[in-house]
Image (cartoon, rainbow, N blue to C red; front, side):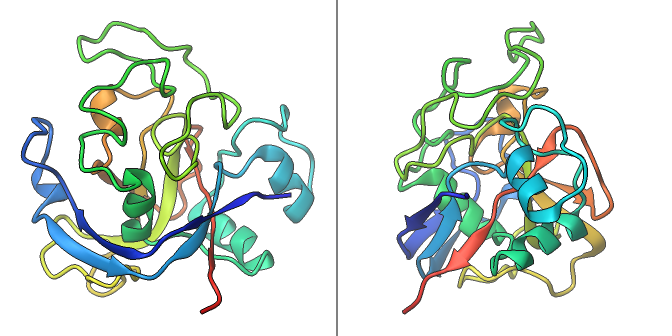
Amino acid sequence: MIDFVDIPGGSFEMGGIDADKFVTANELPRHFVTLPGFALSRHPITRESWHQVMGGPPFGDGELPVTGIDFTQASEFAARLEARLPSEAEWEHACRAGSQSVFSHASNIATNYANFLYAETGEVIGTGCPSPPGSFPPNAFGLSDMLGNVCEWTADLWHPTYQNAPCDGSPWLADGKPGCRVIRGGAWDHLPRLLRCSWRDWAPEQARWDNLGFRIVRDLTP
């Protein structure tokens, strides 16, 4: 029902890169993270998968990413499948897929690579709606829609910088902003700068936004 991709463990440098003019203090200090391998869902969870696991009335087009799901609901979906939400470090490691560029494939991004709405000039260049996962090229790990389409919940509480962040890939839950979780990836109604690999923001745990979805992680057996 849900296709998982095995993501190799290892070390990577997390955070904004020097060549990125849109880096903010939220994405710094840049730091090394060493984490074990894990399995991440290839696509954001779809409406059809949500309906199959959680029941209730269908959400409409089952091929589209499920949105309007708050943090607790997303966590419950994952738990029913013996999975969990990714940590912020796991998410960025999977998104970068071994790259150290602004986006996972290059220093710029176009609408043939990801679903976003505006050019940096403010011109509307996208479709203005979510797309079925897999409509755009996958990254080097074979993951689709890590950038654009819908933002994604992570397990971490919000911290305004990476000062004292964990270096083992675990969720950062100590001393964060209560009730506020990190979101990643950018969405169909965003500017390109919000699709950068290092971009991060937060949402209240009760947020049920039409541009916010999620994907899930399973731990790999040693």
